Length: 459
Image (cartoon, rainbow, N blue to C red; front, side, top):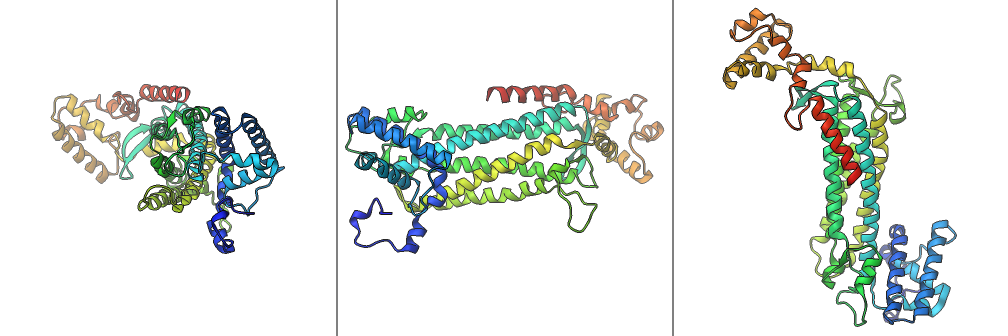
């Protein structure tokens, strides 16, 4: 295939250099966005009288045919093409001759690729947000089902205070709402059309950039032509949001790995989301969660790739920027794949409330409530804290629990202890009395679930 830019050159590009320079093998996935952008550009050229209206109409109709043929598989990508932009333009010219050559009037590949990547990221990120909403719905359903299931809450991976499983799940739900917010914020800043910035300096033609922007669903136009073609901040922002979403999925995955172990046995994954061992027949491995945890590093690497590509680039466009796509595409593919598996894995897992309750009954996770009991009787908190610590040490020595320790042992430390103590340090009481906003009591968890359901509906 002849290069569109071949007029200046006296010899063909070396075949290995041509392959090294080519991006069709990965940027072909943007063909829909490239054709949509070209159709809007052609429409504007005709409306402005820059090219004849009949030519603009023929270009648009032919581009529509090319799009249909690519969608159906009737047209194959030419892997000898330099990139998706050159492939589409070459196919257009092949079908309608010199009229097709008018399409590239008043634009450059620089603003064309900047447009395509914004359109592609907008489409894909909206899809990721839809997946996150689906995961939020799963979390809300599981939290509703287990809003009163008592489990130990942890700090330093040590049993700390009693919470409910529904409360724990809602913590992740809140993380994912922030992820949606970050992606939405980044897309708002991204939603400016660079088309019409041309190579770097704009064009001598009387174009209507705002008409093209509106046709493509943009809120406005890039206000500086240099920035319009050189900007990839939006890619960094979205990669950072993807990476943080993967962080949250990875933290959740780590807990799934712990919870499914025989040491915890808080949940059991459905067989459809577990694997076995090639040698140990008893094994049921949480491989999906482990893979999500492992793939998080890939997305971190994609973010660092784009940051590194951009850090030393002068304005405006440089070929280095071709490297933005593979990092962005890989991060999108990885995150989508993880969410595709993660949501049904959580939806189908079996929650072992009995094991959670059993674990919560040991580890003295009601010690804070014991201290609070004394505070309510008038003792300063620090004094109550010290006495409770002594009581815990005594329980450890006698191999018993705070619930089983006799009242006389309590009263040896303070006369403030009475029979009502035992109701105060029941795990159910400990949870029920966590009534502060955002706390773990059932009513609070129900409010959190209601918030998440409303968020899904309205964001």
